[in-house]
Amino acid sequence: FFFFFFFQAEDGIRDFCLSRGLGDVYKRQVLGFVLVGLGLLNLIILLVVYIFTYLPDAPVTDDYLRMLEAIAGYGLGGSTVALFGRVGGGIYTKAADVGADLVGKYEQGLDEDSPNNPATIADNVGDNVGDIAGMGADLFGSFAESTCAALVVSGTSIEITTSGGALFFPLMISASGILVSFVTTFFATNYMKIDIPSDVQRTIKYQLIISTVLATPVIYLVAIVGLPEVFEIGNGSNVRIVKDYYCFICTIAGLWSGLTIGYVTEYYTSYEHTPVQELSALCSIGVSHNIVAGIALGFLSTMIPVICIALTIYISHWLAGMYGIALGALGMLSTMCIALTIDGYGPISDNAGGIAEMSGIGEDVRKNTDELDAAGNTTAAIGKGFAIGSAALVSLALFGAFVTRAQVSIVDLLSPLELCGLFVGAMLPYAFSALTMKSVGIAANKMVEEIRDQFAQMRRDPTKVPDTDRCVAIATNAALSEMIAPGCLVIFTPLVGGFLFGPKGVAGILAGALINGVQMAISASNTGGAWDNGKKLIEKSGFKHTPQHGAAVIGDTIGDPLKDTSGPSLNILVKLMAILSLVFGGFFERTQILIPLISR
Image (cartoon, rainbow, N blue to C red; front, side):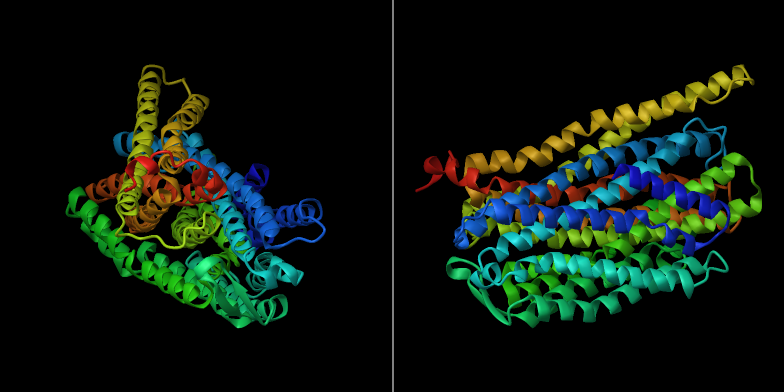
């Protein structure tokens, strides 16, 4: 996958540098189609192999449940790789970015991506590592986990497991999304021309609308054809009678929530709208006003996305229980090809500007790439919004699969065990964010010291050139070493909690982490995106190297670890904990060694 991520970025950079437009990037959207296509193909092959080798000649419901629980390991593998891509990649890219900005731009007064800045190459490489590989791995993990969650819950339905193709309905949603994305791409490459850089955001927003509108009737056909007209799903006291069109409603609830979240994110992070314009104006007063307003903007931006997610959860659970929530997550991810392409636009345009600056092509080209980069910041924020929204639904779907697997009929928040778990889980996003931001600070400090040392050497010896390899090595080593602590927190918390307190204790932890983590992720991502585009607006207005610009640079530097490390990494926190709990649910039932001691 990493090969395809870097191939995607390389192709896009060449297109932008030659001014060939957005359509050419869509023609080479390797990232979206290959990732979804290969992920879907692998899962289909795995399912078919398991059906023919794992099931007995006359399978019953328990046989299907055990088989589908084993397939949940596919989601665990995807989420584990996403931990490296998101957390490690985020530390890498922000260590380089913060170091390059603080020393190169703020202290030395150099332009963005100046070839005289030793950290410029590491910064551009970091865009590919964190934003291309990291986002691809993140959304692939969401796709794999939501599909596995839907499969595990569907294993409790006799009608679905015995009617042939109905078991593959979650995969059919993703497959139909690929076809819809192909048609949407046709519009982008043939009917929507980019004449000026400001057309980019308008065109990309149209792609979101077109893909969502086209996917709605397609999903209806898939639901009517692929599912039994009426079926029962669930176990114990949680059995529900579900109709095929209920599943359609659940899926499109997630689909249209994703569109709404994308538009809200665009409003709060684009400099074409009031929030970022106000943030930019406050930079003329001072740094503190910019920081306070940026944090407030992030907090405020959580309202509509959280309401959309809550409505999707309520509607989906009301109609189809935990199966409906898993379908809602798949609905939001059904246009993942387009979402990945939109997200990839950001780092591609950023690297295009870096190459233009380093190669000295000319001010006109750099001006255009700066506008494309500003649009790319917004598109990257939209992609993060999709990732966070889908992570919330995926985590809840995995939570439902976990309680189904562990046969936890009810999670009683008035019970001391679940309540204590809820408080511990709500603390985890803060601890995880602190660890990742501290890791960025430690890595960035090493980078700053190296850059300052190289500038001192270049002042003593004007013939000396920047040692970019040294900065790349520092970022790489720091990313690998500093991701250990947050990674251990994510992995061992549910394992230790389940070993000691069993499934009910873990249920409380998962609920707390999910509720707090999603809101923190949205706030952090939008705050960082707004600060970045506020700086871009000041630069576009001709106020580079002024006190106002200096205040914006500091805000952007603070926002970098929020929007590219801590915020997106919280997706991994909530998803990886949930999928680990699902896979180890049987182990938790058999151990829970402290339950006999604390039970009355």
